[in-house]
Length: 77
Image 1: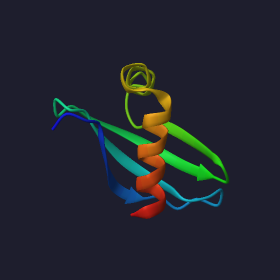
Image 2 (image 1 turned 135 degrees about the vertical axis):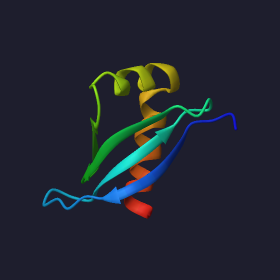
Image 3 (image 1 turned 90 degrees about the vertical axis):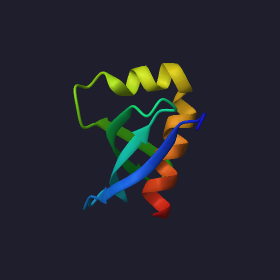
């Protein structure tokens, strides 16, 4: 395994658009829980943790990669 992965944990009800809790899995197996809200063309990520993981993941893998993974899982699972 040599790439970042995302798996659906659970769908979360929202009046603003599709929303889910998503597990992000780094190539080394480290897991991070995030909440993804797809509101029109916008994707809003929130962290289910200490609030410092999303910036770290964006720095390591790129914000576009992180958003694309979480959005895909949220909309397609």
